[in-house]
Amino acid sequence: MIGLRFDTYDWNGGREAMLRFGPESGPIVIAALPLFEEANRTRQFTCTILRALADHGIGSILPDLPGTGESVVATFDAKLSDQRRAYSELAQQLNAHSYALSIRSGVLLDTDADLAGRWHLASQMGADLIRDLERIRAAVGKSDRGDEYAGNRLSPDMLAELRDAVPCEDGRYRVVRLDTDLRAADATYAGAPLWRRSEPGNDFALAQQLAADIAHWIASCEG
Amino acid sequence: MLVIFEGTSQVETTVRAVLADILGLSADRVATFTADTPLFGALPELDSMAVASVLTELEDRLGILIEDDEIDGEMLETFGALVQFAAGKALV
Image (cartoon, rainbow over all chains, first blue to last red; front, side, top):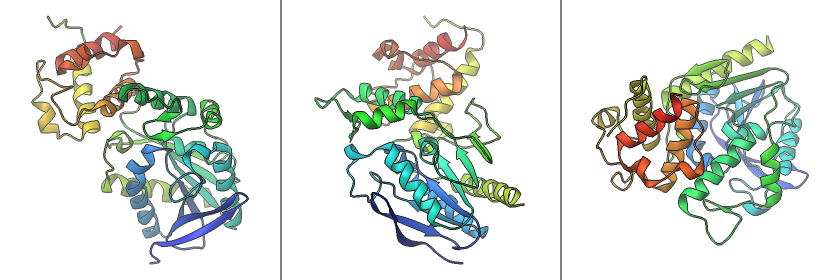
């Protein structure tokens, strides 16, 4: 089985790093982590899902987007429109049936791409993300800098884009949630919301279940 | 005095589960929490950021909305106070 490797991709605004798992042919899953702190809390969990997908024979990519991960773009200069564009351009270059695997606010990143399908975990609207950020900022006490949210300096443009952002649910679409989440879902699974913990964590059993869910769904889409 | 609403035990179960899930506490540990168990200031895991996470998760699980001006030290002082606050919002 082909293991983890690092690679890069180019988009109109620059070059970004990405991880690849599994085969490079067949349907490819593009993973999008949530924005800001939740990315750190879910990265290992997401990679566990991607490794499990590789065991199902499905290749995947976890790209940095401009302003995330190893990107040279500063957080303050990050724009949702740029991130969406980079994601779309990556999908276009793959020359494969690509499927989104987007988690929490990561669902706001796959909206503009030409994809064979979207699989969303615990999908979050931009307005709810803003509400979370403002609550965190109030809880820890506002700093002098008006643009800082728990250590992340966010531009007014980014905040405005996020406020109105909603996921794309067109085409082949599947949304999965934890069984404690009251919102509509095509399936629910038992598990703790790792994105809400203070420390990064993992849930190996849940990752296996979600990978199986994605693999079966992709097989039915490719059908 | 703790005011008892009908359905409080369901809310109480949810509050226990949220504290366990968000703070990374074991189910056994949260099972020992009583109405008087001190929370904010006593549990090192429950810092300011964790408070935000706990409240947002309670909102999502109970289908309630908590306004900023409702958040004060009293509702987070003990397990009983938090359950009473959540029950008051959830069971209208």
